[in-house]
Length: 329
Image 1 (cartoon, rainbow, N blue to C red):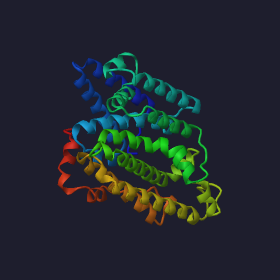
Image 2 (tube, rainbow, N blue to C red):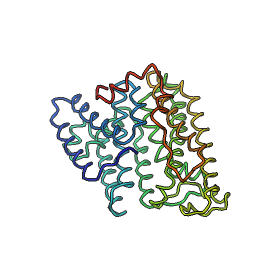
Image 3 (cartoon, rainbow, N blue to C red):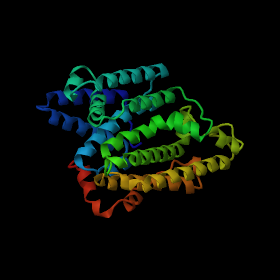
Image 4 (cartoon, helix red, strand yellow):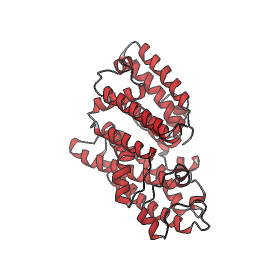
């Protein structure tokens, strides 16, 4: 995460954006105003994902940015807002109520007039537009609730089905509906690729953030993998990190399998989105490989230098990046 905003900053941004959207002269301008703010959220929180989304066509890119804002805020509620667990759950429940109301609103401006948060209102419009199953976002919010009251995961299957499905797989499904298939019969492969990429990305994030997650009371490493190394838990003060680092390398190898599987189904996606998806695979795969090869393991939070990110991006598209940072795209 590149930057974290306070709860007050989020509230201020939401109020100013809602006012701007309501003042827009027509629905198209209202959407553009919301998307511009959502782009600011994405750029502030994830340099890597911001870069790869610059390779999407403008209409789809704006929808992806709105999706990002709608998953970023609940994640911040459970990760960074300095409030009690009960207050976190209250905020998630209020957000969930806005979502349920939003998916029945015919326009963004009407949803905001009805008192809905602008970001979840915008996301609900994406759900309506693409007929995304409403249960996907409910599963996402359930995963966020699991972060408020963490539990352990007995094995990889438990981790994938109980947590990663909601935290990452369904987010991949949101994007799949926006990206679209090359032809309708290919859509099951699009969903399969999205699932694989979601699992890969989430595992990579877990491996990068083991220390940070443990300090929040969370351990996403499967219990059976820890026990195979004679570990009962993640001990940040252990004299020997070798066993824990072996668990990280094992999960890194599993993540790589999912990156490879997602790449094999890349041709199922609409051609205008493939460069962005391939770039996403390449950038985060680099991070996963660095984690897997690291001699420091848990002692170091791995990252990919900007030069290495550029090295795995399509050179023919570099011209888009300076324009993105200037706000032109």
